Length: 212
Image (cartoon, rainbow, N blue to C red):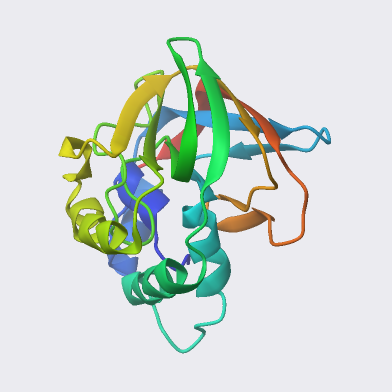
C-alpha cells in the first residue's frame, strides 16, 4: 500500500495483490533486522528499510506534492526538483563502530534494505537479515555531477565514484552543523524548520518476524 513498496520488495512480497495474499496464508516465518534511531530531543523511531538524511529526505518532502503521480515516477520528479532547488550540503561528523569521518555531505542514506524510492538501489549490498546496517553517502558535488550520479543510483553502480562513500555498521552517531531534513521509511521525521542536528542509530538483529 506504499508509494514505492521497497520494504515489500526487500522481504520478497509479490507485487501482484492476489499472489501477495497467497503468501500471507501459505508463507513461512522469517526474522529480519530493524533499525533504531534517536535524536537529541529524545525522540525514538524504529525502521525497517531506509533512513534518508539531507538530499534524500528533501526528495521525500517534495514528493508529497505529486499526488497525481504513482510509484517510481513520484520520486524521480522530486529528485530533479531537489537538484535544482535544494542543493545544500551540511557539514557532518559521523562515527560508527568501524570508522569515523567528517565532510560536507549532500546525502546520507542508512539502509537495512537495498532499495528505496520505488527503484533507486542506494545500497546494493544491504540485506535485512545479515546483522548489519549499511550506508551510502554522497559528499558535496555540483548539480551537474549529481545529475550524473542519479542514473548510477538507479542501477546501484554509484559506489565506483570517488564522491560516494559506502560501508556497514552496527552503531552510528551523526553530528551536523545545521538542522537536517530526515525521512524514516518514507515518512517525514524532520522537515524544513525542525532543528535536529544529532542522531544515534543502531541495529536490532532479528527483531521483527515477517511471513513470506
